[in-house]
Image (tube, rainbow, N blue to C red):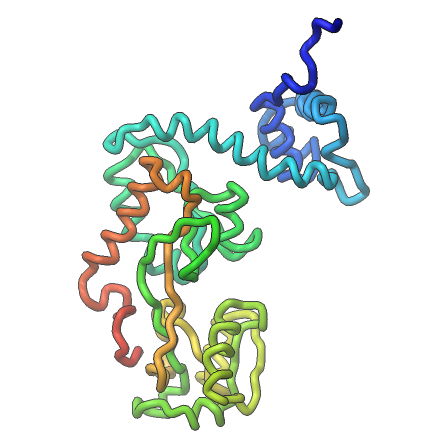
Length: 316
């Protein structure tokens, strides 16, 4: 009878799992070694031992770099969870008044510009031991995917229901009808929206999808829809009379000269929320930052965020 440890009783180590994640994320052993400041051979040895343990290759070298195998893809999610859980043991033990470590916050441009700065400033004063790393919430599948994949601890997202995530509501950001200033500020009608040349971000953009979903049940088909990548380009074209657009209020601040932004004839909003993994939402650093964000919005002076909660026109 063999006295060796059987595969059924063998377990991967955290260094092995961290090595696998580092190589998979970096796209190569050399790149991962440079990022971690370790030798390439040590990473290769760790991944090799993990592959011996599972009995199949998890990574494969290709002309485009190192890619995960189908088995590796299945392993990655569990590896991230295990490595994150090990780090969370230390985070869970922290006292609310003596927080430390790195907090990764994913956000898209408008919330990063108008909602996060006062929160970051206050949080830094209260918790100087925490380094907040701001991530682009419009890459890597968006903030929702970044939280699920363990790339972000918190994400500011648009949504009311994301299975598997805990959402803390922040505010409803109103969409506004944006036209040249010469149009004036009289109320917008459905007929005006239907008869206008509409400029929107590309079709897969959440703004485009939400606006089209708003128009379709009303039987409105804009005269023409032109898709443009950059918000600034869209607003510049509107200012020169080349069409109109519909954008969230936060994305319009500060409103450029020559434009007027008015409520739609029927309200359309995007629900902004903080997304976290349910099992991590109560970690002191995550809970405290989320509370600070909610408190900042609740205690802000009227108009501090450009009247986000109101239905008043947005004028330059």
